[in-house]
Length: 270
Image (cartoon, rainbow, N blue to C red; front, top):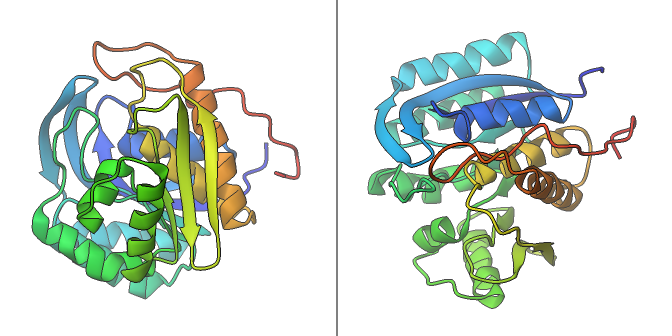
């Protein structure tokens, strides 16, 4: 199988392998592209929760991004967990240096078990600076609520929150609807010209650890291979749904999904 594109992932490590950089690498690889990484933090966690977070020195994060990209230039970048303002400043500096246009930002703020993964100063910097660098931002409902300081209880609220994120400088927004208690999951895509709601069947499982990381990495991969941003979101959602459906059922808490699920991709990647 010939590799289709090169993706740089900037994110934290999940020792249990279900989310974070591990989920990102699995996703990019399963979809036929080449994954590179810049690790921002090391976490000790499992399916029941997060035990500890150790931040990587911001200078070393900068070194990882620039030194890797100088040798193998990424076609696209996926950004995940950035848990401090110093880390975000380092990433911003690196992005200015390597100048890659296709950037997908997954603003990871809260772990599946409820642990907060980012501080208030970092949230403000993410809102004021980093959002503007991204081609697409992919918050879930709790993250969209934190970013916009609004309560989301419906599809309409999701659209309104996405519109606020556009006002902050986001170019395209995909708000993931898994946290709403509905039989059909609504993922809402919004930009200044378009609103699209992707509807998916909700599978009855607690094993959804890493779905957000996986979705943003899948979207980044499809995008890097030439698909439109809306089509990339659609295909990414389908990939995640298939990964949830195959349900490995590992661990005592929110278990991982199956990144090697059977997704049919034509040779032309269409």
